[in-house]
Image 1 (tube, rainbow, N blue to C red):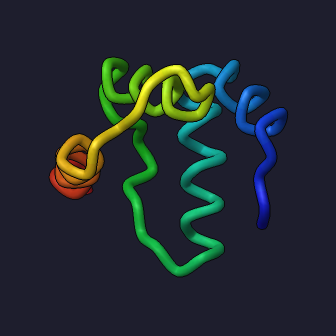
Image 2: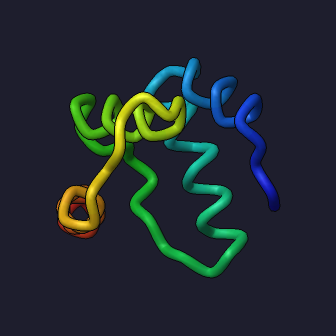
Image 3: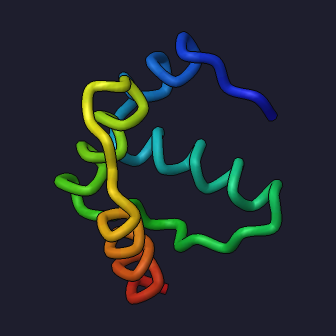
Amino acid sequence: MKLDKEKLKQMAEKSDDALWAEIYEMAKAHGYTLPKAAPKHEDMERIRGAMRGSEKITLGDAARIMNSCKKMK
């Protein structure tokens, strides 16, 4: 699945739960396992910022978000 900038912006406008559900399904389709529950709101806002292109997530930030997801399983 290829996502263009417009699709990313549309996704970023969704609620935390709706956005995470879409991320969850995309990850699942590509063989990744994520918890069904969305990460905390602050992390979702960082993800949104990256999707909009207004914020960059470092590898350390991405690892922290993913580790917090693993703890939620």
